[in-house]
Image (cartoon, rainbow, N blue to C red):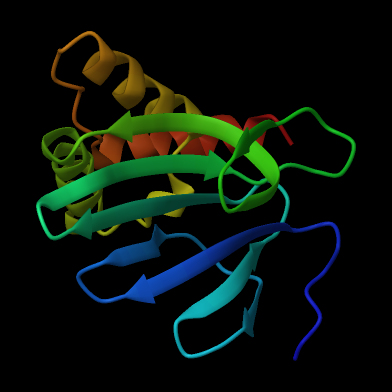
Length: 158
């Protein structure tokens, strides 16, 4: 087994087809440790953004559908706790219910469609998506112009 860096956020993933499926939709993994053929732990460097999807069902249908877009935190910084995420992360978006999760996945697909890695989208945009969906409103589209402005703003802040 490969040791994962202690200062990284670790996420436990499980894949039991059509029963329990916990997976990463996007994000730059910094490490991985395979536990067995159904479970593995992936790690993310501080400040990296990633999407964690949790889905589970039983013989009656879906019992859990969640998507969380998270930012890995630096050691000693405040964070929120979440199941299967150690020690925790900055929660940028938290959505429950398959129809809402599907809308978030479509938003991620649209960002992929403009050739932008969703992991490079500013954290504020993911908060915007969360807040608009919580208010039952449609989030603004992420555009190449908005991404260019974010890159310039980030460069000035360095």
